[in-house]
Length: 153
Image (tube, rainbow, N blue to C red; front, side, top):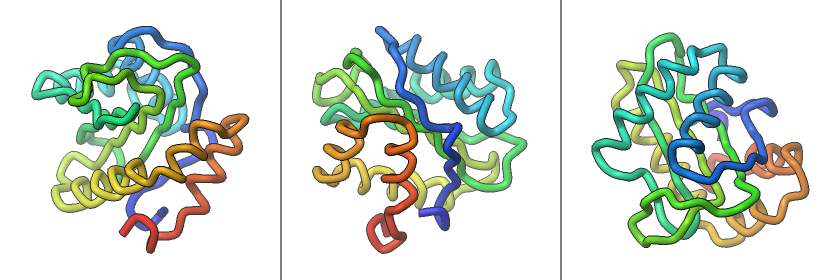
């Protein structure tokens, strides 16, 4: 997994958020804390992307994403919501897993490959269930880091 994007234990959180805006706010703060980014800038970029159309992937998953300066490779932050929240997903279902992706400003194919890998991973029912049932952030991080590149390629 780390060939396509980076993830750290501190970029995984179990949170409460009751709206799309609250989710994006908390995701921006998580990215800022884990990756040393400006939370306001991250939030602005994620909101700008959401204006193009919801990144609510469906089946309880949202994948907010953007390109940003100041990083050298795609990075991920994952939040599991304690209670599902509306994210204007295409299937109309609320989300309880949010996988944020930030890629370098000038990354074209790298951003798309990372996004596709996350999408494939979130379509895997067993992985989706395991993430939803994991007891804590450490277990979620372990699930994500034990996925081989073969599983997401």
